[in-house]
Length: 116
Image (cartoon, rainbow, N blue to C red; front, side, top):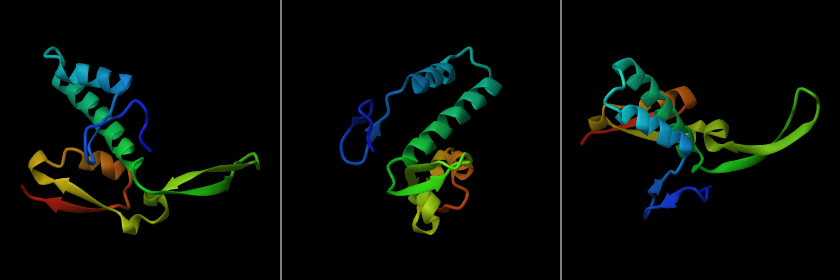
């Protein structure tokens, strides 16, 4: 679902607008940021990007029982309900930079490689 804060840049490209992203980009672009901090902020940024990408996949409504025995109706992504139907494509030229974050979020998803 496209949030009002996202901008459709044409086709399947969306530019995310977020205060969290702005803060992280500011930290990783700052020449005073130490290498260890750069890695830390970059990993946080990639995790957000991976999680946001999953929100564009099909979902299905489901009801679960909470620990307090109250039903909760929500949505599960196809990654949760049928991960065999999903294949992520890693662009190798980019050094698989998002792959680690993707695998942390969805370890069951298959990954293909694109060499450019």
